[in-house]
Length: 234
Image 1 (tube, helix red, strand yellow):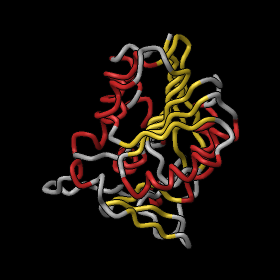
Image 2: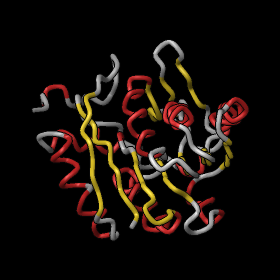
Image 3: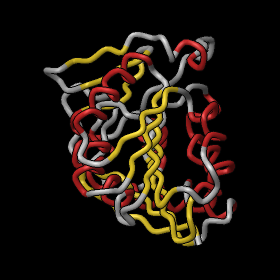
Image 4: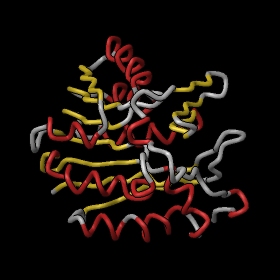
């Protein structure tokens, strides 16, 4: 059972700040010693998530083929997707400074990488229906509405992008950091906050794995487990 004393509320978006319009040109603050990336004061990715990102990437690369990834961050999951092997890797990143890192990554990747600059809401119509074998969604929340619902908002318009038998996986650590204290463990959280929403959207072939994590010192999130979803499009 999760030790609730280890849990604390996650990052909260400031109500009066326009993240959506500020995000593109905002400074990306890298702390190489601690292995963190922040944008607009928001913790985008931290090195302690490495093994978690490996598991997400494993799901995303499970069909091989063409993979769409939303959010580059520190490039953790992107590197693992390349390691597991895919035919083509499309990566969408909305921050200019992080996009430069993505461009550098694309030059040395084993498999073909197509970097796309923009927010997922702005670029989603660029992709043809049924054109991806898998999607990994890890876009940062840019509004309070998106905080807990962005993965579902994406699926409402992006389910059609997957091929039959395609797989969708996602990370919403920001949301789960806020919600964890309300549930006994990550499994209960997923069953009660994720499954019903996924089912409403017509995704009934949903499984997940719970893995152990060890947050870094000073991390705003205090979990010892996180869910790794696998949503099949059939």
